[in-house]
Image (cartoon, rainbow, N blue to C red):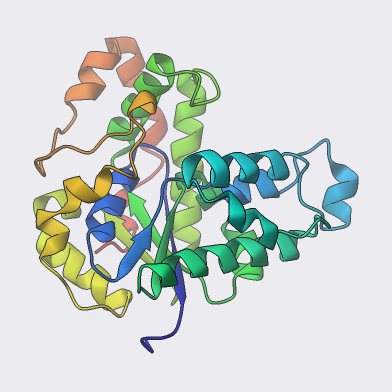
Amino acid sequence: MKINSFQPFFLVGCSRSGTTFLQSLLAAHPHITSFNESHFYHFMVPVKYERKRFAFNLASRKLKPHIQKYFEQDLKRPELLKYFPSLPLMRWQSDAFIKTMRSLTQEEGNHVFLEKTPDHIYYISYIIKLVPNAKFIHIVRSGAEVIASLYEATHQYPEPWAGARSLDLCIENWLKAIKITQNYMNEPNHIVVGYQNLVNNPESTLEKLCEFMELNFDRQMLTNYTKASEKLTLEQAGRTVNNEIKNTGLKKFYTVFDEAQQQYVLSQIKKVNLELINQI
């Protein structure tokens, strides 16, 4: 990768799969710039009732107020809103978003930008069309762990999660995300990180990931990731990063769900064999 080039990476996966943890590790690299979740493409793609906008490739009406809030309140850079055109063409809006992220990345003297919004996994097909040089980092984790964590988080913090999710919806979210990862796992611009591998062998996993990102591995990723997480995490939504890299296993699964729920979850997730997914 040329040092002056700009390379956007999208970190995706089912929510509660360890995306914030992996983002914090990567953001601790001196040549990677990353911010808190943008949800840009989630708000850009028109919803079902906006059929005319979808037909004419226009962004959803929800996008403008969302990006205004993101740049004013989250990034505290309202002056960058001037780059977004008044005409809501999806391509133009996406180009403006990438342009602003490039500007912020270059301000830090970097050339690699990491965007982490887990739900962007459901919009990969749009991102590929609108950001041709985009590369994707998927993270996968045990369905039992993810579903229990997602169920708990959305019930403890319903507002930032747009409401508490039912058990069936949590299962559906995980199954859908895994299926999408399976569809892309062998594509050249995609790589899949196994959460278990990341926790058990963080250095070797990050070395492989840095190779994919055309960066040299830097030990700061393992020593400074908690500091990097401070500007990325959202405690009021249950998104936090522990000071110690450790595997909590299925503890949450057995504490959040009763026996009947546990059996139901296991019966649903057995449709997927994570071992068949190529993971680093």
